[in-house]
Image 1 (cartoon, rainbow, N blue to C red):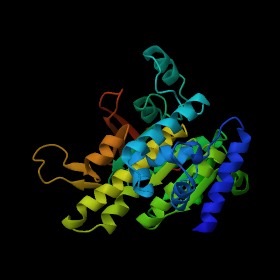
Image 2: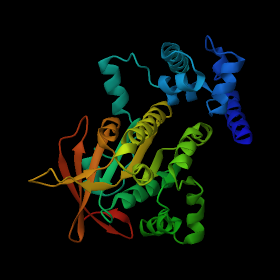
Image 3: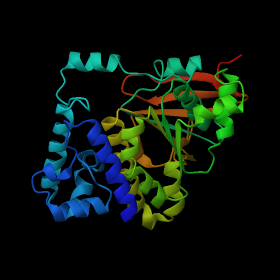
Length: 338
């Protein structure tokens, strides 16, 4: 734990040295002395960015201070980052916000129907929940976005909760899309993917909580979490564990939402589904995780099988109507209908 903490601090010091006008230390915050700093560091909170990502409730829990004081630390940390131009200002006017969002760096998956569904591609500062049954194309959508990101010389973080990530599949898509001719030519592309395997929720949360240094260094365009919510369902069994499970999921979603904002990146997570017996008419399929996941997600897309083709349905969005996109799965990942 000490070595991991020292690595985190060293990486964040290096980032701070690259931006000398910004002080990232937590001790600049009123009321954060040596003892409080030690408590924060023990839990991987080593900078004002970490303060913002963890949120006031968790920071108060770690340090034992009143939540009102932790709220003040988060507010002050956010203002420091705003003044340095590292994050979007929270006091933007409507026209300014419009222009800011119109200049988003959208990332397409290069399947025309899906890209039209999501207005040209996935956007930064947003969480996309992609849910559906096994084989519906969720992971292949993530693979396709990953290939487009690394082909554009941008980095990707992939957190694999189901042990299903296959670099060979990325190479296959790179070759099929004519970005690389062979395995050797594809290898430099793979180096732009930072991969983490998290077989349980403890490792998952530990990975998310220690991402700040690599986020600052790599500036990933996309962060993929494949099957994260399903791990909580597997480990928290029985109705008696429901509250604890939902609390942990809520904490994870808070961290992810803050990461997407403070590092201007796109979070995409795949989610499992279950059948709702209360639905008498229509599709009974719904994503697991409940309202906590739904409220934290900016966009929710339902993937489903339809014979040989697949359908992606925009279920929830702050800007899109409910609509469908049809596509195929092949050696290109997600692809246009023939």
